[in-house]
Amino acid sequence: MSTKKLGRLPRVHNPRVPHLSALLSGQTLPPPPASVDYTAGLPANLGVMLNDRLGDCTCAAFYHALQVWSAKAQGAIQTQPDVDVEQLYIQACGYNPNEPGEGPGGIEQNVLTYLLNTGAPVGPDGQSRHKIAAFVEVDPRNTVDVKTVIADCGVAYIGFQVPEFILPPDQPSPAIWDVQTSDTTIKGGHAVVLAGYDDNGVRVISWGNYYTMTWAFFAQYVDEVYAIVDTSWIENGGTTPAGLTLAQLESQMAALKEAA
Image (cartoon, rainbow, N blue to C red; front, side, top):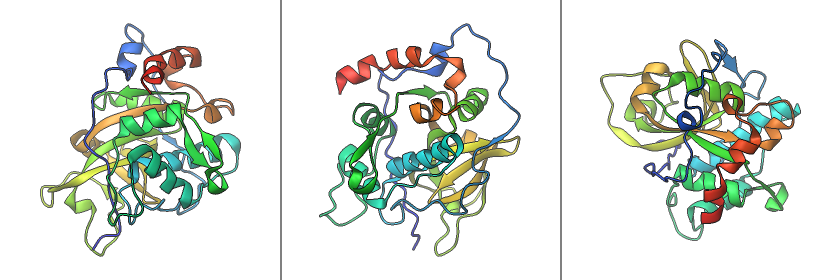
């Protein structure tokens, strides 16, 4: 039985969430770098973030993003304790630790909206909050925009359908996820962050480990992508997505903040 859990619920379509393509309408951007790898130099294992027993991948993925931002922008990786991950799963997704099972899973846009308005618990006993400044939806079919977001924001936060072949029972997941013609039964949805790319595919952080998702796999199975605008990244030398100003992006969050 696999100890790798999933937990991303089907995507929703909140009209208040801005789309990168609309924000960039009529603009021509310079091409993104040919390759980026923000996982270079990170520890060999980043921690499973409880996603071996809970369906908390939407929360675990964000804490992996925090690891990338802190390591690359601040020079020292910050890994939050599992109790903080569990608290975010409780608060943003409705998990009840007193009930058996993996919990309810999570909807990516709902988790991101919670991170915008309330923030993720951080530090011992979650005494502090880490809020994001904004998030923007990206069309998965536009791989140039996906690359731009990874290069500019450190990560892209994505959701995809998981085919059975990447979750072999009692075996490690394959290092490279590519399309196959067998074992393609969908096992559920999963949330991860992408922290690099090249011509072969994207660099995935999931269950504390690193994988490569080929562009063919990405095209077939990924159905939602988000750029997360994080001030800890920007303030330490990172950039905003596609050259949009922080003020522009924050203004796009007004409706989501009013609705909270």
